[in-house]
Amino acid sequence: MQGCVRLILGLTAAFAAGCERAAAPDTPAAMVELGTSFDARATGSIHGQATWEGAVPSVPAFRVHAYLAYASAARLRGEHPNPHEPRIDAASRGVENVVVTLREVQAADSKPWSHPPVRVETDSQRLTIFQGKRPGPIGIVRRGGDVAFVNRDITYHTIRARGAAFFTLPFVAADHPTRRRLDQPGIVELSQGAGVYWRRAYLFVSEHPYAALSDAAGRFDLDRVPAGTYQLTAWLPNWHIERMERDPETAIISRVVFAPAAELTRTVTVAAGRAADVSFVFGKDLFEPGSPRDADSEKNGGRLTCCPRRRQNSRK
Picture 1 (spheres, rainbow, N blue to C red):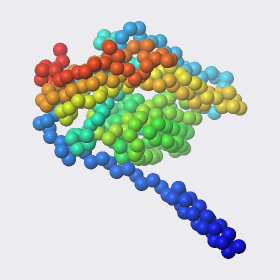
Picture 2: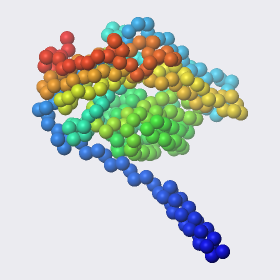
Picture 3: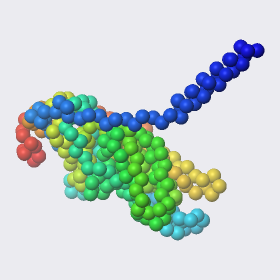
């Protein structure tokens, strides 16, 4: 009998200890120390352009009908653009807001972090990321850094994070920032509830600063890259809808899931004092269901070596 009691007490203590360990908060990940061996003389640069080939896609808008009987229907009724509709310059065929990231960079060899702080804002019209003063749909965040979230609208909003972070922030009052630390590298997809299920923005959480967004002409630049051979990836979100989730009582759409993004990967070799030129070509086929979205195709693949000309002559 005493043996049974001791066994029960032992199991209870072990269970309690296990619960305590499970409930203990995770230790925040420390920022990776950058640049301990950085040598600016042993660096080059990468320049390039993301372009669109073929017909520009016709992307339908999301339509909210006036007859839907919920609180936000009046302010939301009408058409709302698909946030993933590609922005293609008519003259250059350049694609804006392509995320270009460099893989396999050693933290010790990296330059110091160079991206401005990130703030995420929601208002009556959109979900916007401010990287410093630049507004857009995408921000680049250092792993272990924090991001400010703020509602600029008098109406209730929520922001939902999935992917490399998992949380939901409700905003009852306007202009009261909430800060979140992002400890896991990867892509954080930001979406909204409260009736605005189509809105999207993205945070790229990186160990090093070698990430960039293409401009309106599709051009991008990575400077002070340590000499070496790397994988360079271009990422563009998909406008196709994979599925919609509806409220079981009202049948109103509450969430939309987009198809996976398209990614193109190049191998690039950077030499000290030189500039490597890279091109990425996107087209509708990369976004269609069943297409390979992480491609090193004949058009986009192959090995790039550093071009012989200097930075000032790297663009024609």
